[in-house]
Length: 239
Image 1 (cartoon, rainbow, N blue to C red):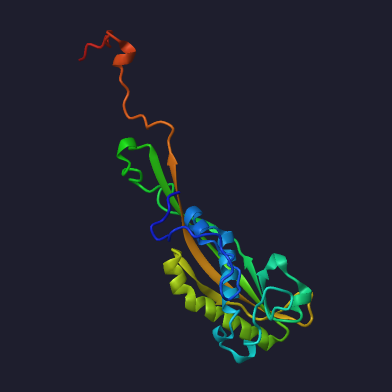
Image 2: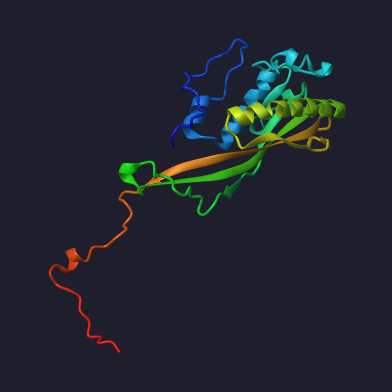
């Protein structure tokens, strides 16, 4: 896969930034390998963590003290659903991230980019280029001990993602990335003191690849090398 033109120069291994937030999203890997569902999971977590490390990023006054930190004393838990910790969630608000099913939307005939590979003049026809669209979504489960708290947290999170979506779409070369809907409030299963409001974030990205043939496509067959000096004849005399 060739590096897209919009990609910056390769970056060194991510280190802690001045806000003491560990960058879990490697832009160099994205540019080299292209988008993948697990990258969007990491990107959403990274985006939310950066928002919740500074009270100036938080709009609602009730949430300004719920700041994220790297440890069990964090004011808000931001993790994937596979790392759900009931003991921590019961004492503070939480945003749990879950990837939903994704679909492959084919483009054109057999996903082929017609005319692809023509720029390789020395091996014309040996290369074929393809592209397809992957469409999916993530759910951000906004959890709080009270139903109003869950509603307020969901509104805050939805606004954060939605307001940054134009920049994310443009700079990270996504076909679509934004909040699609906010579900109704539910009482968290197996919990009697926590409520959850799911926020769904839809996305779409293009996946392109190239195949190189081991040999050039066969276009003509020369019978001279097969027949030698012999010629074809027929007994047909015509009408």
